[in-house]
Amino acid sequence: MKGKKVLLGVTGSIAAYKTAILVRLLVKAGAEVKVIMTPSAVDFITPLTLATLSKNPVGVNYFNPDNGVWDSHVSYGLWADVMIVAPATADTLSKMAHGICDNLLLATYLSARCPVFFAPAMDLDMYLHPATQNNIQKLISYGNKLIPSGNGELASGLYGEGRMEEAEVVFEVLNNFFLNGKSLKGKKALVTAGPTYEAIDPVRFIGNRSSGKMGFALAQSLANLGAEVTLVSGPTSIQISHPLIKRVNVESAEQMFVACLSEFKKMDVVVMAAAVADYKPSFEVHEKIKKKNIDLSLSLVQTKDILKTMGEQKSATQLLVGFALETENELENAKVKLAKKNLDFIVLNSLNDKGAGFNFDTNKVTIINRAGKEFLLPMKSKAAIADYIVALLVDAISK
Ligand code: CTP
Image (cartoon, rainbow, N blue to C red; front, side, top):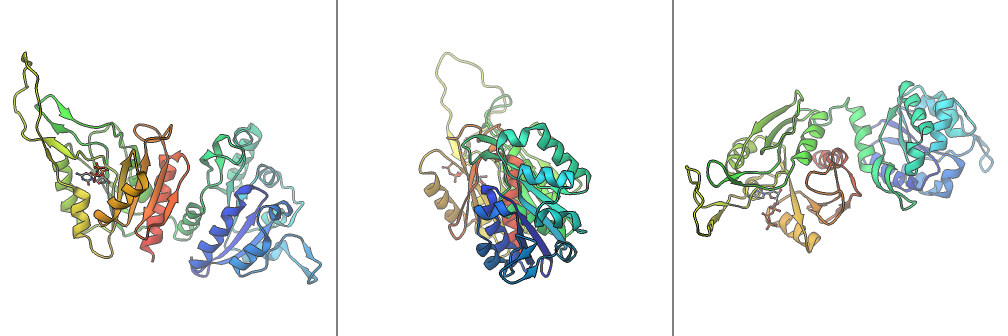
């Protein structure tokens, strides 16, 4: 990112507030940033904010009567290594798709010779309208790169697609673009996924409802950025195929412990997304337990805490991520777990939200880092959450 020239086009959407964070992240990473706004974008965030953060004047009109300077769309277009229109409203998308250029941002878009990204932001029905979808497809056909909108609460109060992607993820998309899609190249990651099965007898087991979807999405996101991933999975029907993902199937917590600890030392990143059983039957019966006319009680013993063991052994450069599933005092309990297991991040799942948790394709999480900073994500696809977690990891690795 150092020395790269990023041209940010901001349009009139409430999501414009996210550009302040985006500009800050880009500048912090060493990029040179120039901002152009549409006239309606200035109703949502002031040019002064973006000029201060980007350390460059912000272009809104072709001509600035205050200083007599003509802001040339051609020179902006030639200057940039990459242009990103974020947030991109339905109106601007439509104008970009049809070559309309009635403001500085649009004229610059038509003049830009560099790759162009766009991050749509609008209300659910506007986003789903065939006109908008056709415009998005048109822009993709011109070679522009879509940063898909997330799912969640919209400014209107409706829920659904249309939220502009979070600044951290947009930043990571750009970072990854400059790194040629491989910001984790050469890094090794261990990811666990799914439930564990603790055998009672050859037929029965103690298990849980984990689907493995979150862990598999994380493995995919890490591999997409070039990391070499070992995915240790409990029983699940999910399939995955990626040249950088090596899958190791296990069943019990003990098998997961052995598989993880044998790989741990060489890992740069470990993400424990598996729902590991905390208890297992105190002994395994090798014949099927027959029904008798009396009640049966099962005595349980603790399993080994894989994450805690890794937290005790971890070096200063290894990053350790745990998950917490809580039903009460959620944040407080998650923070205790983060400290107790010596983690760099903990991802708090809530079972209290509709559409979140086991077996859903969506989830709602709060990520807490070692310093206690909280990142509250709205309801999103597990793939989008995985991208967000991985973006935070890339940021932490590069520090
Ligand atoms: N975990 C682990 N080994 C275990 C149990 C849990 O590595 N034997 C990991 C999980 O993969 C998760 C984190 O620890 O990343 C938190 O798991 P959780 O079961 O919620 O925490 P516990 O510390 O076991 O506490 P409790 O179940 O009482 O909430």
